[in-house]
Image (cartoon, rainbow, N blue to C red; front, side):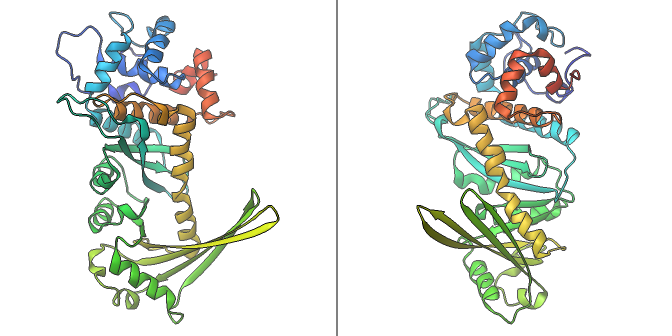
Length: 382
């Protein structure tokens, strides 16, 4: 690493090399070539190695590369062996150093399965299940804050506490779907200085029934707010109701299981769509618990809606702009490590405040222009 290295480099320089001592290529060089390549449109090991060969002179400006550019086999071997937590910790540390949360300071936690990663071979000869990545997303900033990999959706309950360890939760509102509605997770969020807004479904039987009963009682006072959105031939109306107060919680079974419980929330969404001359209306109610001590209905309505930004602004973008669901990289730890590289690249692109093109177009531009690539990496202004 040279003094003119991109700022991100220092966060990965201490990653533990999984190889024996007699290797030709430095780990930090391999990681940084891969980050630059993915940023510039590479989706496979062949792409990464080709990018390195094409941009070797430019890469020498800030990487040592004592034996030139690694081969595609070297990239494949290293990312299959590299412990995913090494990259995940470095990634989270980098984001904490460069991103100041804005707006509601809402962190949405949600999982996504990378569909074609099943069937890879592990070191013990067994075959991998499809990678399921649990990610934390700052909705107002539009950046991924960290993630933890698991091999199935049911393991989100154990993955979320590991993910929380990577994050600075102070002053933040953490949202999850019903899988994350667990007493231990709520307590962990509070202990780390955050607040929670957790979706409640039938997996929390008594809690779910008691919350529904509270909102069904018209004598219970509540704050109410609504919003209406029109577009694409439909009208979406969201009505949020918020109930606070000890009198309500005393009648809820097992309420002592939830550290900091302060608020229950109901959001009713009515969607009216017109198609071929016919009007169709569908209504759905969702329920939540929260520790937020400023629980206006308007604030809770906004938070519940912002949570789903993780689907469009992270999961969908990663699939469309980085073709993640088409990736056949699936050996050892490689699927998780490549997912980390994609999140790094997405955040670097989103960090360009002057960007006027989409994420996919930004990757193509970075492939064409080293000046633009340097701007994304924080090396120069264009």
